[in-house]
Image 1 (cartoon, rainbow, N blue to C red):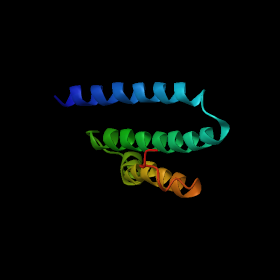
Image 2: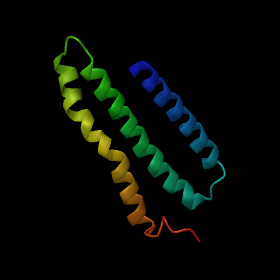
Image 3: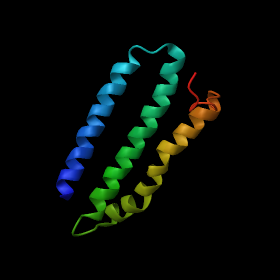
Length: 99
């Protein structure tokens, strides 16, 4: 069951990246900068999640895996932090309001 979950998450992440790349090509320059912020922070978040999971499951932890296991969870805040920076930098305070 756990394998099915991680396979589903991996497929959804790949589909999301493909969709974001497709959208990126059609965006105006100002929106491209915002999209770069989002994708960079999402990549850091996903990478830290993968590192965190892979080091937790290793049967013989080494000093490198312990170091990664300590640092990797800090990367999980990269996505919410990037979204917050984007909202304040580009004044997207009413982002949830539909016009």
